[in-house]
Length: 272
Length: 272
Image (cartoon, rainbow over all chains, first blue to last red):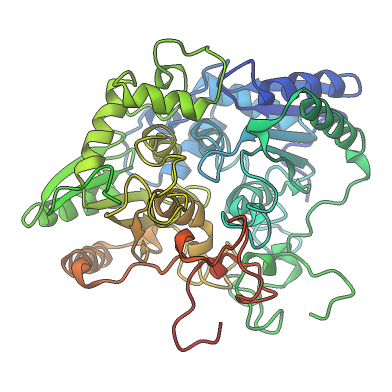
């Protein structure tokens, strides 16, 4: 099925979230965008600088915001008809073009800052990012590995105060891959975007100048090699691993397990 | 160690998040607060009605917001000195009194709406909700099961469009307990608040009048019996399950596992 919004080859959108220009986040944003803009058509959304309003509300609902009905459907219609707020339409235009989406943020309370959560809440509207129709070829719903934003890849860059063990697989604060699953799987993969492995800067509050230099280099190297990376192998809804009513993982797959990792395809050498 | 903010016995704070008064969320909020106010001193924060600004930024940082340094430390100092914004100080005053905290929200992109995330980002400041000092008796950091808001319990009420299987242990969208772990463990438990089992209203978009009546009754019954409930047995940092450097779970506990459930105490009859 053709993509609803075919991306422009070579284009990218970098969404940046940090309240302070002079910060590690601000520094990495400037270094990263400067490097990326040499090889790509790069748009940016600096959510703090542009004072993006993260509160989904009446301005997202078109000319009759109090009309009874489903909020998501109403916001979707408003956006489709160009009646959503200009700031949301502008973000959608940048996102529609982008083949690569970069979301960069500091980890606050083990998730994205409110302004980035609200960017998702407001910009990923029905009819643009996803819809309730079925793929005519497969008869499957177009979500989780398919959707309005298929054909894109996303890199999530996180600056975290905690160290790698505290955010590791058995870490005190929970594994970061699991903590950010609502963003990577529940939002990005839901609308069809392939998600690359997280890029995490640990101990972000305590880096000295040498550490900042090292992390800058590491980010630029990562950006340089993105084209050769494989995305996280989240299961595609259309592949049949959630049979029958499409609600739960097939009981024969990874039986007995209920952790979030079951939603990734196991590596080929592991028994199912 | 004495509590930084001893709650007022019998008091509660209900934080409500829904953009529309005429909604299932709005209905449950009115029914629930009416019932709870008969037996408790109840404060409410209706984040949409009061137009709460969820964007942590300069107004949280006191008189010199651009001073270099750690944002959390700076926001904590501003709040301690009464220099934070009036809306944050007002929320902290309500929260300081409350023995029971209720957070009610619709599930958007598998997490809380931005306005509630930002309520946490802005209100849970250092020195109020947590601090870096050690408990003089145990010598342990006062977080994860201890902290500025210890002595309180929280009930999280979620209205979700998905059904119980899709959000269940092997559900397509991920287990809701895991999806909300950043809120329940990473924010509430981090600052010492005991968290009760989630109260989830599934299929929330499709309820008919009978379904609304049934869910209202179920919520009121739940509220009525809260005093007899046991909170989620998240591990307390001070109990020693994260030994040595307090970063990762003791390798002898639930060896080989790395899912988020390892941060709960196993039921007594299960082998460690």
